[in-house]
Amino acid sequence: MYFDSNRFYWATGIEDTFITATHESTGRSLDEYELTDHYRRWSEDLGLIREIGIRHARYGIPWHIIQPQRNTWNWDWPDQVLTRMFDLGINPILDLIHYGLPSWIEGAYLNPDYPSLIAEYAHKVASRYKGRVTWYTPFNEPRIGAWYCGKIGWWPPFYRGWNGFLKVLLQICKGIIETEKALKACDPNNVIVAVDATDLYFSKDPNMENQVRLRQEIVFLALDLMHSKVQERHPLWSWLLKNHISENEISWFEGKTTRPDILGINMYPMFTQKELFERSGRVRYAMRYAGGEMVDQLCQMYWQRYKTPLMITETASVGSVRRRLRWLDESIAAVKKIRQQEMPLVGYTWWPLFSLVGWGYRQGKHPMSRYMLHMGLWDLDSNLDRNRTEVADRFREYASANISELETHV
Image 1 (tube, rainbow, N blue to C red):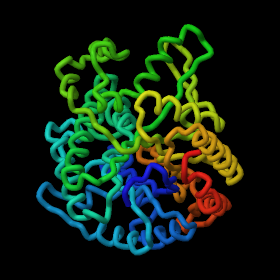
Image 2 (cartoon, helix red, strand yellow):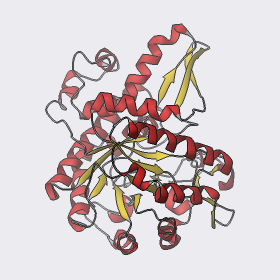
Image 3 (cartoon, one colour):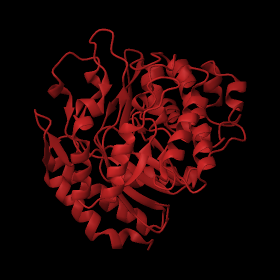
């Protein structure tokens, strides 16, 4: 599957966060494939994708299983799963990393060898599946990965504060650049889908204007680094130096601009829109549920800043089927409007295919059912059985009936 900007790509995906490090208090890890029983039901789950006529799937392969030790490689899992996907006519958009790393990489992202290790891994994967897997996401949501690993200390290497966030983010971005080079070196026709999370900040307090501007610029920082945009006149230049990032660390990115084929943006009506306010002398935020206009606003922002074809690589609403259906209708209506403006928005992904386990499970002590987030086309019940919802039927209708309407720019 090679990239055709005149096509529109409908996709779904299976939540694939892999945090294998156990929490010191609870003893829990966060391997979504294990928690949702996907390791056992993978063939059935892939059949669900085909059942609704979707031909493209964002799908993560577990690096910690493929390379359990530095010089040990085990391809049994990805070989089985990807072969099944090919047989079903499903084209994978392969996530190489969805946050977690193998435990043998000491220091996780702050290991100085991390960029070369992920590049080696990427080259191994691309070589093994050359000509069969052609779409790759080098790293899902670098900013969110840096936040959980470096700012709030939930995941390895468990750093806290803005300096930790920035050090992890710089390493992640270096790894993405090296990964893209490795993928293109293996096959120049490989399609790079650079995926990051979106956020829209606002405040009703005029005194928060500077904080709103700062937080919004941080949203773009990973992509700006990888596009060599972070130079002395960049809005975050002084802030980076203030947080002990040296000019030498920033200069590593000069002349190493990445050129992804598609810029994937992840957006959720319940998470993406954030209102800033001050409480007890600290900056706080509250997430405000957004409407379909958020899709247009975000696409405009990213297109104007990067001039790269866009794809909605994750979106869904959490909660009742009715609420999910409303977001599906609103967001796809927004997609149609954007396409009529001749903006190159080339795809839409409902994420996830079925319910996922919220990330608070790893450090929480309640039963897993308390952390289950029903955001998918299928719901998981107490036995982890997959129960089809009306959202799956509606999504199938859109993907089949509206494909010709969305296929070519108006």
